[in-house]
Amino acid sequence: MRHYWLSADAADDWLRRLPGARVPERFGSRAEALAWLDGEWAGLVGAVQWAAEDRFADVAVQLAACLGMYLEWRRYFEDWLTIARVVLRATRRLGDPSHEGNAWNNLGIALREAGETAEAIEAHEYARDLYQAMGDPYREGTAWMNLGIVLRMAGKVRKAIEAQTRACELYRTIGDRHREASARNNLGSALLEDGRPDEAIVEFTCAISLYEEVGDHQREAIAWMNLGITFAETGRLDEAFNAYGKSLEMRKEYDDWYGMGLTLANVAGACEAADRLVDARAHYLQAADAFTRGNAPAEAAKARAQAERLTASPTDKPTPASPPAHTTDSARPVPPPPDAPDTVGP
Image 1: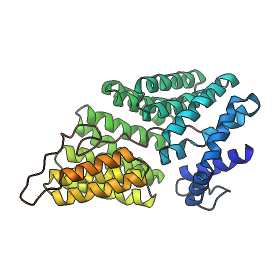
Image 2 (image 1 turned 45 degrees about the horizontal axis):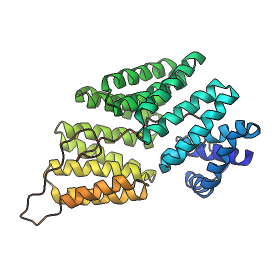
Image 3 (image 1 turned 180 degrees about the vertical axis):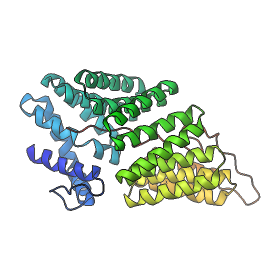
């Protein structure tokens, strides 16, 4: 158990590492850390189940706290839900409010990805209240940010804006510019959904600047994509293509296949808006391939369906795409910001 914990902790450090940060002692690279996690995944999931036994509970909880980033990256949401429930029960037995808050936070993310938005909202509210009682503004900001995401998914956009604004205020107060970037990115998504694109552009642009400052290109790619979506929705297609191009460059840097799928699907939607139907079809097919490699079969199927919709004889006019609503069913799918479901470590 201790070996798993220390190794997973080092692997997690690699996944979260920013340029210039210390190099973790274990593993020679991010790719090596990911390969170890992939190879040991079944054993790691099994080991976390030992949290049900009091003598292993503490180390199992610590181990689980090191796996959130990996679970999100590989999109193993069913395993995440299983682990999160086991860990929550263990932390409540241990009586540690910090670990319990983390457990509620990570359970909320897993529930959100499973489509259980009402339960996810409740989980993030529990986490927020625990962090507030502890006087921990850093983790409270994380809870507000994740709560804001699921509120937006539940259609409670005004409340989502309030939650993300509160997260921004907390991170500004404690001087955490990295997390402030995430909160601003998510605030931009909520503002866009509320029909306030000009304000959304301001937030996405600020998030990009902050991410660039701290060297987080992986999340900067998300903000560039969201900025591109906003430009596309307001008819500024040249600017949208430029933003999507920057997003794709950064996605490729990290082999972020799911993220590439999202960006490529949005490029395809912008191509449709520009009446470049051959290009649109090609990008939908590329998106489908990227989604497949990113363990997102449902998204891959939707992208292929969009490509098939555009497959017609040269004289045929293809069936128009659905309106650009803020769902992944539209020609320009606004994604849930992968950055925002912020996992909390030990």
